[in-house]
Length: 312
Image 1 (tube, rainbow, N blue to C red):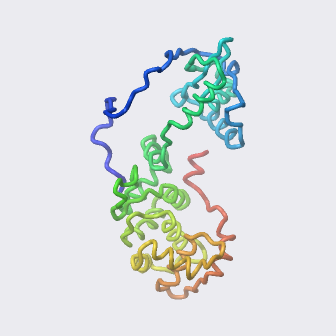
Image 2 (image 1 turned 30 degrees about the horizontal axis):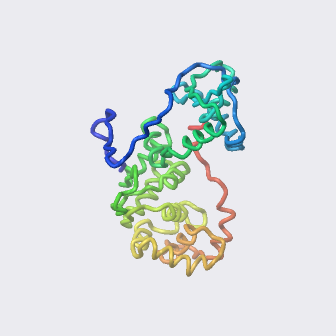
Image 3 (image 1 turned 90 degrees about the horizontal axis):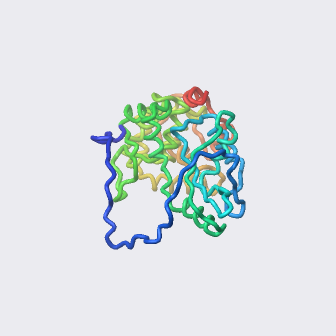
């Protein structure tokens, strides 16, 4: 199951101890705020990132899902002539300019006359920030009622899995814990909460601490891919997995299955487990070479009912 929610969701801001630090004394003039036309803002190519295909996709996404509650005012620098240069938030500014219903946006304005100062501020904005982890995004999505996050939570609860918000400080995981959010999301998106729980339960029964992405993918393959599905018993599979530590299985699969071949490690692990587990009646053994040949055919995307309905 997922971590218990905090006893209180309200946390007042409190200062941290800054003992041993020397706070900055020259903090500059305070910013001003204004509503401006996004088309009046200027991008300086000398230090700003180029608009890539990924940027265009992001901008289109912002336009399509525009909400003021999600909008973060761009930070702009004003030079002596009064021009406003975007230091941080160009994607938001371009999305606002592209949206037919958005005429003006709020911006935070700082006085910076030189390109060098503005470039330095740009570096600070992009360096001095804490990126959200996949775990944090999952919990935020769960709180927002995202259907995939809700299904992931249900799968984890059924299987007795905990998605940690952060890795443990001492590096020691408890059985059933995981930070492999993307692997859990992938199986739940394709197979739903029940199918995801089935995969995760095998690794919980195997005593895995933590559940790794490679082993989640390997179990998913054995339970659902055409070459292997319905050929192994889940109890027997958990018993085989439990017989070696994750590193030992990875090393065995590397030496005895992959052997330098172009195969994903998780698939090599799946083949190793399949070789070791007792088969149901009528099962045909899968060799390493067959596993490689199967990789191409099994690379096709599977139906994605949860994500499809969410994205619709």
